[in-house]
Every structure is written in structure tokens, then in C-alpha cells.
Figure 1 (cartoon, one colour):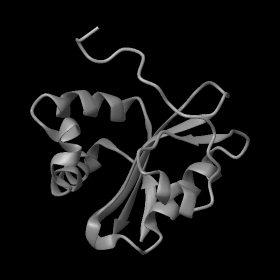
Figure 2 (figure 1 turned 135 degrees about the vertical axis):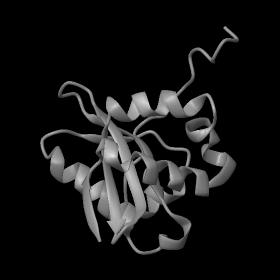
Figure 3 (figure 1 turned 90 degrees about the vertical axis):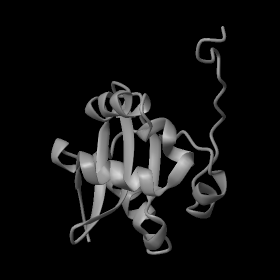
Length: 132
């Protein structure tokens, strides 16, 4: 398995992964979401894991001008879970930004607790879509 920085040539494989995950990720790969997510990928730091030609996982984050790196997405293909791929992707982020704190924006808290990460506050939605 190799972990490398995401490149535009990986786009199709990444979206195949998101589609394989089903409705939970449809905001990213659905008709309106795909173009928006492509823009997010272009402005993010993204690492992807390949097992030969299979994109088996990725992590997407953003660096906040020295104040920290924020992980927004971490996904490992269902058939590859349990192989420490998510952990290795997170370690890649840490190695790439050794002098900065790394924070996770998560709705899968038990996974990060299992890895031994310490809870640091929470996140609140201030404005939701077009409803405000």
C-alpha cells in the first residue's frame, strides 16, 4: 500500500469510493455536490491510500495559517477497514505538519477515541444552508 498526495488524476477513483459508500456520502458525489466537492479537494490537503490500483482510503484537511490543521474527511473503503489504513492516513497528516496541532471535525467520535485522540471542544452550526 502507498499513501500519496491527492492529484486530479485520482478524482475518478476517489468519487468511485464515495459512491460505493452510498447515501451517507451523497452530498459529496450527488448531482449538485460533486462540482462543489471537486473545488473543496482543490483547496484542501488530501492524502490517498492505494492498494495497487484500488483507492482504499483518503483523508482531506485544511491548514489554518499555522494555527492548526483541521481534518474534515477520513474514509476507508469498507472491504479495507480493520487494516490500520485510517490510522496511517492520520499519521501522514501528522508527519506532514509536525509543528502544528491536528484537529478532527468528526461525527464518528468512537473511532478517534479508539486511536487515543483527546477530545478538544466541539463544533456548532451557526448558520444552516438557506434556512437562515
